[in-house]
Image: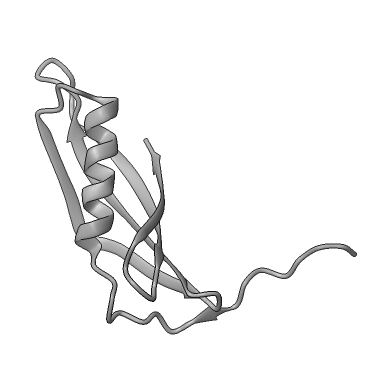
Length: 96
């Protein structure tokens, strides 16, 4: 009672979606977190795209970063919320 059902999933509209926009936003956020980052890469085969009925697409994936020369490489996950109508990144979440 009182619970909102999860948004239904629809087939993603890929016409305006570019993983590059999402990954650029993630790279910028990581460079703010780690100003001396020496290595930053995204793993293309980990990308997962879904879209809800409200026109918001969710792109999830993984990448690898080396925060500085002294630090070991670390893996991270990212998720972008993207407006499927124009491809604009609405939100970004990063997790180690």
